[in-house]
Amino acid sequence: MIRRMSERADSVQQSAQDLLRAVGGGLLVGLPLLFTMEMWTHSFLLPSWKIVVLLGVSFLVVIGYSAVSGFRRERTWTELLVDSTETMGIAIVVAAGALLLLGRIGPDVGLRDAIGKVALEAIPVAFGVSLAGSQLAAPEDDGDEQGMAGDQRATGTLGRLVVAAGGALLFALNVAPTEEPMQLGVEAEWWLLVVVVAVSLAMTFAIVFYADFRGGRPLDHRDGPLNHPVSETVAAYAVSLVVSLLLLWAFGRTDGVSASAIAGQAIMLGVLASFGAAAGRLLVGGGAAGSAEGG
Amino acid sequence: MRQNSVEWVALAVSALAVIGVVGFLVVDGIRDEGQPPTPIVELHRADAYATGHGWIIPATVTNEGDTAAEALVLRGSATVGGEPEESELTVDYLPAGTSVEVSIGFSAEPDGEVTVQVIGFRLP
Image (cartoon, helix red, strand yellow):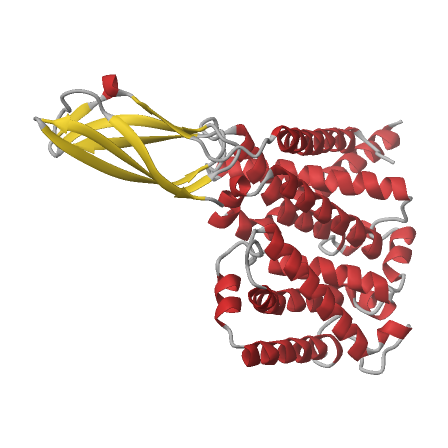
């Protein structure tokens, strides 16, 4: 009886730790954008449906990331969906609390405005919560056999591209709401954009396959047709550009803007997105080799 | 799948948060008729007060449209001491359905009626 009770206390303590780690991770990633004025103003400048679409896209990214990183235990699809919904919910509560503390929402702020702010700020926080559930967990936490099995499951090419998209979104989101990508993209000459594309490709290629970062892979690593280092770099860059375009569209940077200006903005924001994509791929590493260091 | 009360509470609260936020935005999106920004200015002349530099009239600007207005410029006109006088102010952002408190200044207490005109604003 006593043993059972202490086991229960342990499990409560463990859950409390998980929850606090989720909150901490969420704030760690979300704080820069919680302090970004454009995020506050976009809460009412963006129409409601656009915010719902953005929440939906980030929900998909959270699901994708949880599925790929396979943390804690093997899960069914239902569990994955419930866990991902919980991630979004925790993020909403954390974002609301942070905005209250920062005085951005309160009794004198309109309800639609306040909810828009909470919903937008919940997006980066949700990525942090999601990361906290896997990458930021102490090794003992997922030290049960199933967890280790999940960790060591090699991440395939598609999975890596999902994580690349997540990393790109996470990184580029910090800059996308601001004016800077717009100015950079509109002012850049075409040849400068070509050079920027080339440098983005070369640097991300080097980061993942050559610079010997933790989680990087050797040049001769292959486990699928798309997994040649060059094709993976190009595919990840394409994903980064798509993420950049999505973000530019989300923040109204494409409305009434010429195609060449949109391309310029996407390429400039794509610098951040592609580095985020590279960082994401380092995080999941090359499967067993990558997680051996993590564990 | 959920082991204890902490996990259940976390799940329930987060499910409520998601349903609340998404539900509100969806309902708001459906109700949105795309009404353009409609700034309505309400002067509070009873609360007006004198300073060393003139007469200040507080006012509330409310956007009754469905779209936010940026860089909203308002102009107040009145007759002060027999002379026509104008006063301009800018509201950086006026979100839909939101009120912003402002003040309009004149050199002294206006004689009769004070009218407010919307000079213009930017759409998001």
